Image 1: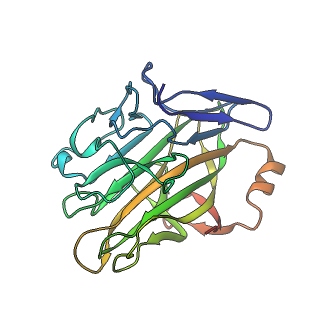
Image 2: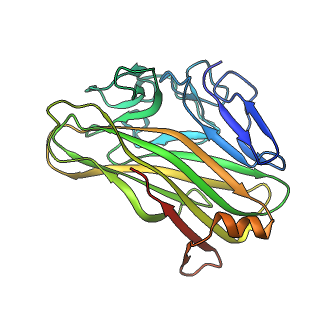
Length: 277
């Protein structure tokens, strides 16, 4: 077994495995389990596949784009990528070869693997980690709260940005307020992994996300300033919590949210962010 996705709700808590070899299938909210979590504890940088081997990620739920090995053929959900840029293995940081790593962000403490990337000129500049969860609750999803942690290792001269955004079709993405982490220009003389942001963002949907439809959440990156090589990023503890029709619950989850109307669309998203570090 290699890594896990947790599904739980106020009444039900179940643990299911998604990074081990299993029948391919979409990761989904269900009627009894309205939360999905990716903790990457057993990720070993072994790539992506719809039936993932130990140490790999489920490509029905998570993919990466913007890598040079995919030139001319961007990765899609359900694809298999188990070598090269997509599978650089485990590391504590300080890499020079671009691609996806299982970075241990514990700085010598109890190992804490996270979904990481070493950007270079040909990889992840720009690039994107893309998550997808399907609505299998049998009813419309009225809101989703997403929480996550972002780590940065400032070991190089160039400044890079990692931002988060979401979508209902996987094509047109909408950002959130205070929606990015930017690494410093110039290297830290003693670089370590730093928790750059621990936060949650909320979105309300009117009309709701219908049964069978997907919700997409992305972490996107590109160069910002400076020159030379690029800092490393890692993402951990990504958790999606869906709200199905329970008006009182929706009000509690999204209390104080800001309202945004998408131009030319009936979709309304009320967004709120609780910033951490």
